[in-house]
Length: 560
Image (cartoon, rainbow, N blue to C red; front, side, top):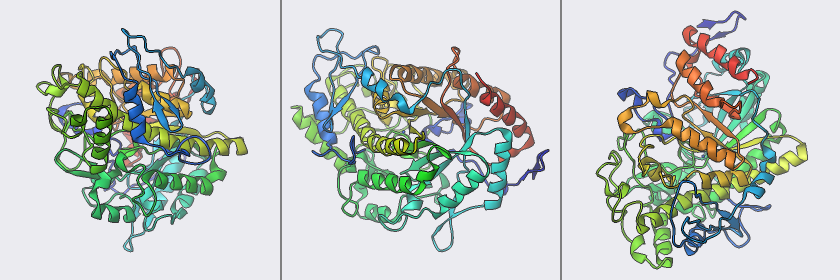
């Protein structure tokens, strides 16, 4: 029991633990002395383009215009979308291909965001990982309601701006398609409002059961799992056929495999239902909404899976495109390119989950490496699928928010999360990022195309690792969380988007909290739009930790 001078007491059961569920990059860094670390439809009133949105056509259009290419960090790829297709003009230092600039259009969409210069940094605290449970009848419940209520009041007294709440697809649409149950969130949002806190809502289309070793967590909807029991190709697969059932593969985005609906339509329906039910909270209680775009809510492939023994830090991970739908798409694109052999074989010499880049031919220079024509073809397709996925989903989310804001004169910030893949960052190939879907190398800026899509839809970019410094990571693994953060800040300024973020590991020590502040506040006075502390559990209320946390929150809340 922890008692404050204002007579508020907080008590958590001793068994409650903080499980790092955000991002498979959370690694077992503690074991090696490091810190581990971990984001659809289109413009117009409809979620899909009138002519049909084709991820395949997105990539084919890229390939038609890709000629005489040289990839340099200072020459980024800026995609433009027209009638549901991705049109890219590749710039070459040696060639005459024009650079298609979208800066003017992106600037016009920045109305959702405000200047981050000379402002406070609102601090949100992520709700406990086990906020929700399943009772004996199989129905979701809110656990430890009284302790949670007291905890929220304590956070408010400490100066915390708000809390981040995960809205789980597997809770809201748990039993039957299109039967949305919002009663749990009605109750939880009411408690948060009564405590005087604001809300960051994370719409979660993934599962976190792998973090509980089969003894808890939130799964995908039960009716989705029933479909997956019959057709395992709705999930990502690695080259050995192992599936990851935490998130649906991108290959089913536009396939009506879910009771006549596509995966993207399923995501759309939940967003629309959420908007309808909680519209009165937009702009007053709910200030930020992040849209789940992949495993752990992040826009990436599950290349570094935790919990099943396949991957441990600092392995490079494996490409996740071996379900039949992704492979069919790859074969079709390769045939269109005039290279059918590129779509009918496994990626050669790309190592395995726990390989180091040294000695893995694909991540070095040479025949069939990431620098070869085949390597560039594959990586453009692999990362391009991810970009099209984000564009389709964020387009609808932005449209919903824009309508609400115009009607209600309120402001809600749209947020997209990416993973913090910081190990092997100092290598030329950035292999851990490539397997996760970020085509980012020493010769190519892989985050600029993502930032361009976010800018188009007025979305902020959420990045983990805000508690990390290069000096705290194992030097031999060529890590650079600081380099990654600098790159993200650079592309966000270029594309006029806001940056939000969170810590990756539990940090209650003075040095760790100081590092968070240094990463949140730039030397020129610019700040991240908001910071989410990861996450609420009994440790945060221990006297020695609370005495560090409260001054940290108040420093972040002071004018920069």
